[in-house]
Length: 113
Length: 113
Image 1 (tube, rainbow over the protein chains, first blue to last red):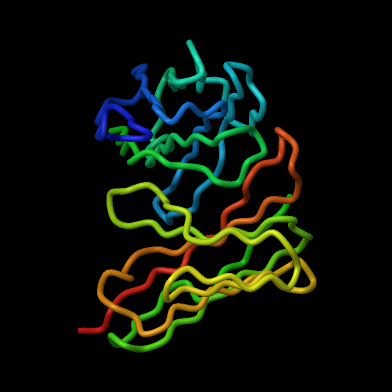
Image 2 (cartoon, each protein chain N blue to C red):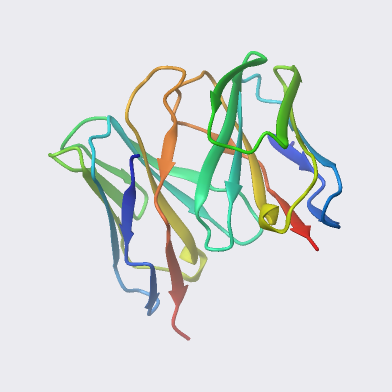
């Protein structure tokens, strides 16, 4: 059984488009996260949600909007995609907020042309 | 902001060799973590350290939480081909819900043919 799953695995799109990435966890965790990993493999947190409430919101363009319909899902919607948005986006979850043990999804490789 | 310097950036080793990598920070962390990422996958937690001076093992892996709380190292003994991947150190400075994990830039481990 997949603990943290993301769809799609790969996403290729044109500049200016709007796209969404979905994430689901079946671990019963309270907290979910979105990370961005650039081409140099640098991993940086973007958002975290605890029980559907936004906890961490890093300096991310407001074209990025996370949505948590319930505590098992955290989706990421990106408007007006730019070339610099190309990266691998990882969803993660943890038992509670502030918990170090985060379980990561397999990632979504976004390529903006 | 907080930064982690991880070294070396990459290393080529012979199977059977011992490996050592480390991470230093400009500020204090309360928790040090070591993750491994394999191609096409998300990072997986290897070892978590909670106290200054703590030395923890996980099979052939050993990690230590530096006395100053500003550094940590990871050793892998008798490396095998499946050790190949990118190893990330990460630090967390607090325990609150807003306490985020900061990741190092990674050490890419390859086995010399």
